[in-house]
Image 1: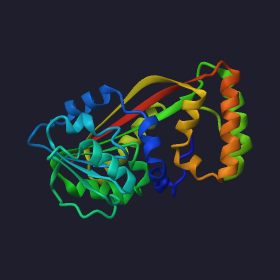
Image 2 (image 1 turned 90 degrees about the horizontal axis):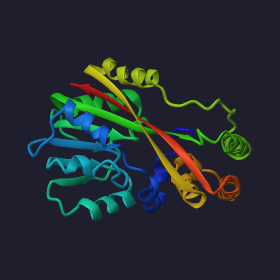
Image 3 (image 1 turned 120 degrees about the vertical axis):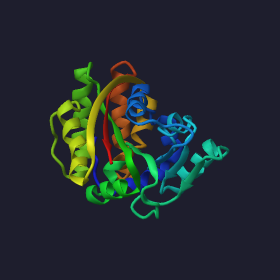
Length: 264
């Protein structure tokens, strides 16, 4: 899927669908974070771009003082409904870049499939400034690889993407590749440029299976898909649904989740 810049705001327009169909993250992700930095009832934690809370509860449940920085109004309402009764939970309903945050305050700052929306230099420098000395930054992201074990369905969906998605965005088809350890390493060491040290990175894997209707609902939560003109998007999604139904009605996604860790 594309990560075209400029469409981050579109998520909030499908906030409830996002909450239903976007996955959380493997437990091993949080195990690795908590092995790297202790989070307990004395800790102050900030999450960048919480969305509807896919990565919030596993950290908040550690009993920490938790700040969610989430720009979406609808997402903020969902987060309040889920976690607002916890007196240690608070929301800053602004973009991370615009939020006024105290320097040298947080033991952990983390971003789950959100930090790529922020300009690199501004993002890393602000994270560094708000972390305590010895505090940790964790960024992780889900990278889906569709129909790995069904090459015929993969080929057909790629052709449909050519016809609709690639044509709409005027981009060329590229070979399918899974997210690699080298990519995870390269991204991890970006933090070093901004003063971070003790760099670590991990990869985790899982599979998810969807019916054709579920998969179309999932596609409808991707920002670059939402931005496609409605009539084109409707036809595009219908073709994808037909392809899945013709292949037995189910589609499998092989996820790779990368985690990068760095310390101030």
